[in-house]
Image (cartoon, rainbow over all chains, first blue to last red; front, side):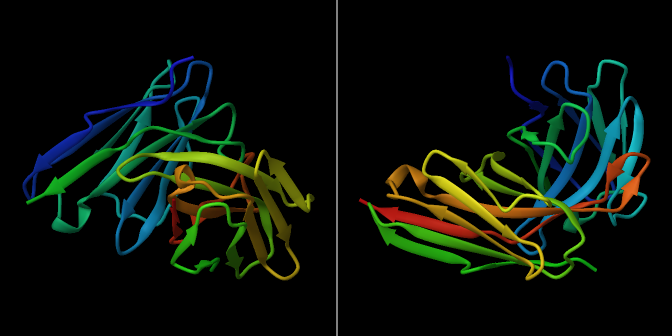
Length: 113
Length: 117
């Protein structure tokens, strides 16, 4: 069974631009969660999607948004990028809910200049 | 507000040694606790998940314990190997429910383990 895939793996953007990251969960998994990892703040929960609905959201500004498609693939979008958005963005999938064992993708490393 | 702390931040041990990694959390109202491993530049690998009603979980050379009342969990690694070198993270999921899901998954900053041959 293929693991969680994330595209692109690396991305360089400039301040003010927007970016869209993609995550394909393990086949059959319906819950997709997104996390931001930075050296200063560590790993922080962004949001969770299940059946195309956002089920839970972390403490991030509205510039961070996401969506999930009917095939469970998910995208997250960050608008008006700031230097502080530079981070590793991780996606994780689980069968039904993120309270179960989560399987993580390799991440997308975003650098904002 | 739930806070998760991991001590020490870094640990270096010789190969073959048994070791314990510590995780503490401030609010005992958790749904479960998970231990993850992260290799440099990569995503996380789930190691063990302990439900709030459980006291411990074991997988191979790994044993994780949970003491909810004291807000502590430990990850015991037996007979450490160089391949165990990685950052180990613990995370708690809160017990409050939002439409069937629990609340945020809150991570500690991790313990960076180095096992020397």
